[in-house]
Amino acid sequence: MPVRFATVPVMEPILEIQGLTKSYAGGLIALDHVDLQVRKGEIFALLGPNGAGKTTLIGSVCGMVRPTSGSIRAFGQDMRKNWREARQRIGLVPQELGLDMFDTVDRQIRFSRGLFGRPPSEERIVQILASLQLLDKRYEQLRKLSGGMKRRVLIAKALSHDPDLLFLDEPTAGVDVELRRDMWRLIGDLREHGVTIILTTHYIEEAEEMADRVGIIDNGRILLVDDKQAIMTRLGRTEARFTLENPLAAIPAALEQFHLSLQDNGSTLVYRGGDGTGKGKAEVAQIARILIQHDVTFVALDQKESSLEDIFVELMHEQEAVS
Ligand SMILES: Nc1ncnc2c1ncn2[C@@H]1O[C@H](COP(=O)(O)OP(=O)(O)OP(=O)(O)O)[C@@H](O)[C@H]1O
Image 1 (cartoon, rainbow, N blue to C red):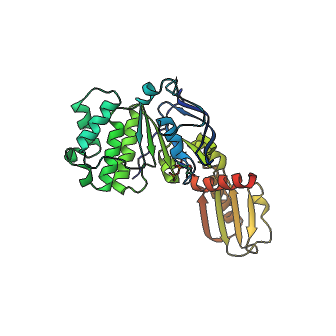
Image 2 (cartoon, rainbow, N blue to C red):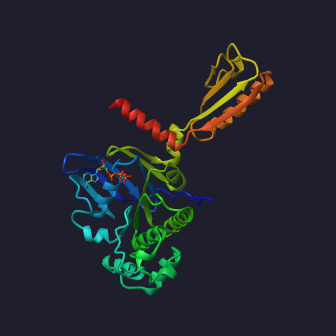
Image 3 (tube, rainbow, N blue to C red):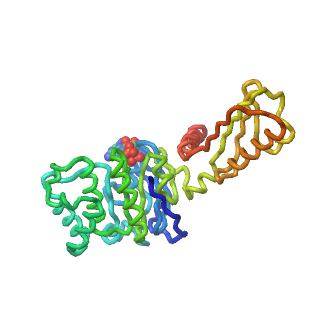
C-alpha cells in the first residue's frame, strides 16, 4: 500500500529561485528563466520528461552546476554569498551512484556527516543505518552490496548531516518495490520532522502519491506550479461513456444541463465534465438515474478520471501548439 501524507499548511519559502538560467557550453539552454518557491515543510515534486532540466536545477542549488544567470536563496540566504552555510543544511540523493566502491558504508556516512560540519554521533549514524535497513552492512565494502543497497547508502549519506532541505533526484527510478516503499515511508517520517523535500520524477504516480505541490517542467521552463489538488481541480476531467441499448436521435431534454454528446450513430452517450473534485462522478451518477427514469437503457458504462499523466500530456501539447 502506498503511504499517503496529509497536506501541510502554507509556510514561508525555504528556497527561492528567480530567473535561473543555465546554458551549457555548446548553447543548449537547460534552464530558461526558472522562477520557483518551495515552502518550508512541504513535499514538492518537480515533474518532467527526460532532459527537461530537473537535474540541472538540483545541481544549480547543490553547487554542481554553475548557473548562467539568476538567483537562488535558501533559508533566506543568497547562495552566491553564503554558499557554505546554506549548503550544509541541504542533503542530496543523486541519481548516479558516484561512490568509492572500496570504502565501507560506515566510513562513507561518517565522512559525509563530517564534511557538512556535523559533530560525530554514533547514535545518529546507527539510527540512520537502521532506518534504511543497512545496519548489518555497516562495515561492508560498497562493491559487495547489491544495487538497491547502494541506493540505500546514497540516501543514508544524504541524511548523515541532518539536512533541513532534502533533494531526491529520481528517487525510485529502477529501485525495487521494497526500497520504494521504504523510501516513501522515510520521506513521510522526514517531513514529520520538519524536513522540506524536493523530488524530481517522471513518474506521475510518484508526484500524485507523495507531493503537496507539483511543478511541471519541460525544455527548461516551468509550465505550471500548483497544489496537487488544484492542478486536478483546474485540469481534471471525468469522461463517461454510456453504451445504449437503442440509439438515440437526440439528447433527452431532461439531460440538457450536462456536458453530453452522442457518438457512434447515437448509440453512445458521452459525458465530459467535472473538475477533478468529484463533481464529475456525481454528475455521471445523476445522468444514470435520469436515463433509468426515462426508460433509456444502457448496457455498459465506462468511466475514467484524467490523471496527472493526462494533464501532463495535455500541457505538453498546449506548449507545443503555442511554440
Ligand atoms: N554537462 C552538460 N553539458 C551539456 N549539456 C548538458 C549537461 N548536463 C545536462 N545537459 C543537457 O541539459 C538538458 C537538461 O538535462 P537534465 O539532466 O537537467 O534533465 P533532467 O530533467 O534531469 O533529465 P533526466 O530525467 O533524463 O535526468 C538535457 O538536454 C541534457 O542533455
